[in-house]
Length: 325
Ligand code: FES
Image (tube, rainbow, N blue to C red; front, side, top):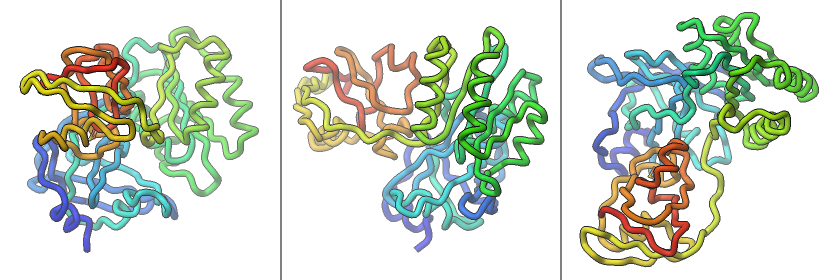
């Protein structure tokens, strides 16, 4: 069964999502495939800012993939996907796509955009973490922004290596082992001009290490940006209550049960797509109380506002929340 058939079987078309067609599939490396999607009628697609991702549905799940192309009135969306044999199945489904298959995707979204006030953009990527950083490099090349990239990849297995070379020229430093990376990283972290913003993407321990070293060297939190591949494993959380303002009922959310499941069990129909905090479909408006935001969708500012929450993963810091439902 093709991925398209699976989607038709399991997923209704969600309002606000896009129905696109696979227009090209090409191998980047032995384990990384690039896929482009276009409008079936050839229309322009919604623009996006660098660092944006797309949530693509597959079977009963959905995954976020960084957009690697240029985002100004694009005709195609391009993603590159690392094949993960023992993952949840998303990467295998992407690798099984063929030209002409239809997919349902979210509109592009970014919580990893370049800072408008940055004097320099220091990009750091490891492995498939090159994908969101590549659109930053495209943006810098197109608009004349100052940018440099440290790209860690194993010899012969790096994706988009030539793209990075073409876009950044001498601003690219390639590292193929941990020792040389650490030496370059320490030098770059200690020699940046004032107003430099740092952007990192790669495996979780790689990002944690880079961010920790930057903080230890005095980089302010506001200059540090990171893009996780997927939501971390979440604990069961604490039980809490939710008052539904429109119906006046209160429901209890037990530990280990999501707010989304609780709302569904109470008979509400909440749009959802990924059920893991990345697509933004399950946003619910918060009237009272402080959510425990655990998603990768909302920006830091949106989380601080506490007026909306992703009910598939987020919970409550207060004993009770009130939602506009
Ligand atoms: S369903 Fe995707 S963020 Fe909740």
